[in-house]
Length: 201
Image (cartoon, rainbow, N blue to C red; front, side, top):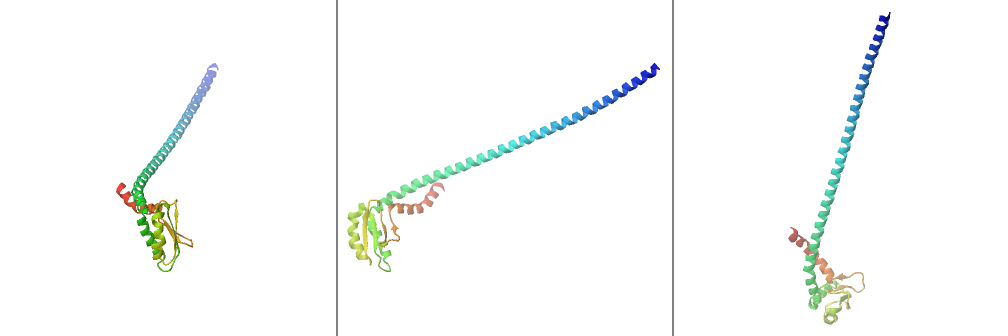
């Protein structure tokens, strides 16, 4: 009887031990699978974070390089424009000022323009000239210019005009400017493309 009881106890013990061992192995295997899944997921997330960081770094690098390139291009263009303006200004200002402060040159231009206004019918004109040319040009306007035109001409002199003159119909409406500023602007526009080509190809 005791042997049977011992056998039964051993059998129950062995079965329990075997079952416990099997369950323990299953739990361990399941835990191992879960751990591998967690590690794989963490690695995938880490890789995604690194990839996103790399993309952001590349985007930032490209943006910075683009901004630097644009800034450098703008700086070069501004420098070229400054050089071009300096040269064109130097080329035009001295010669224009010299020509438009010459009483003889101003008389010739006034005569040509005034005749253009009076080509078809008489037009009364008003001319504004530099104060510095008053002594030489006022007699010319009063006598020679008035005699060669169909309409009347009135001259006034201003300290605001450094060189050249403005001319237009006496009744107003519009006038044509032949001052040193307008001549410089006009000549500069013609010189600018050629100067740019010579300087920068």
